Image (cartoon, helix red, strand yellow):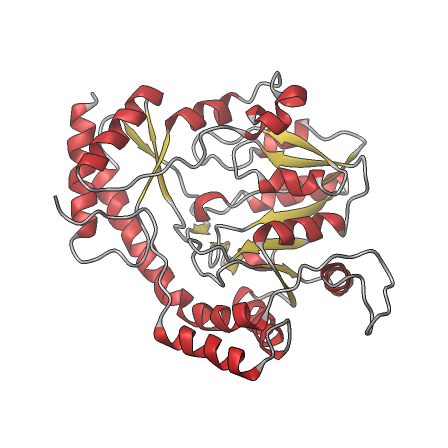
Amino acid sequence: MSIKIPIARVVIEEDEVQAVEKVLRSGGFRQGPITKEFEEAFARFCGAKHAVAVSSGTAALHLAYWSILEPGDEILVPAFTFAATATAAVACGARPVFVDVEPDTLLMDPQDAAAKVTPRTRAIAPVHLYGNACDANRLGDMAQKHGLKVVWDAAQAHGTRYRGEDVGCLPDMVCYSFYPTKNMTTGEGGMVTTNDPDLAHRLRLLRSHGMEGKYNHVILGLNYRLTDLAAAVGLLQLKKLEGRLTKRRANGAFLEKRLGKLAGIRLLATRSETVHSYHQFTVLLENEAKRDAFRNILGEHGVETAVHYPLPLHKQPIFREEHANQPMPVAEEAALRVCSLPVHPHLAEGDLERIAQAVEVAAGMIK
């Protein structure tokens, strides 16, 4: 069998190793000037006025929520996403209210979101799932109508654009993850972008023990700082991001062209105003049995696949008791049908053809 094609590949290059070594030799490991430089560069990349670096994507969500929510507040969260979008709200004492997703995109359904607003709703947390932008205008208009803050989860959407602008400049806050398999990485790490100077100031207080000046703690805070070691990697990864996004988009376009007309496989839609960043290339099979058979056949052909995600949030054990009886038909069906294929920028020559051929074989076998 040929070498296995992985679903993701983490690449750290020699210049990044040298940048970390330079920080190690300096002795300045903690958050410092390199982190500040990384924040400024990331803000410029997104077209945002402020960027606040933190220790993980989950920390980004937690601080964004903490800056606007009080215990008992409700926040609208899509039922189909990674758990941190909801659990970070629980960590603030807030209550996630789950919203179903659109069947053609698996992104938060604006109509269902509007129906879930109550007098206790304070915010909404749409997720740019797989690197595909939400219907930001409809969701933003709905939030404005009801006086809600918006925390956009862009953990998978570095470089995604909506109506000509990077999603990182959307109001009120946008949260990123730099986990190793994301479009860019710092090992672990995260970022919150915002155009609101008051929110940026509050986020910086919350990430560093609520300190305004050394040992002057003005509010309750935690230690969610990013290190200069991580920021040194992030700066160089950011410089390479556009090139890698170009490859992701080319890979995504190739797979869409080759797989788009195969019977039994449905591609997710991308709105005309969106420039997808292809963190994942995810397709829908007809049902769970065919999805699992499809994955087995691809595995036999040396193509690794993944399921993002096998259980909607309202069915997760931590939320099941309160939320399991609330119908989320699209999210529930998606969990049984989704399958992600390799689309990362480090695919070797010929890998895309191997992936397409394996999918064509599998599609024929599971009819």
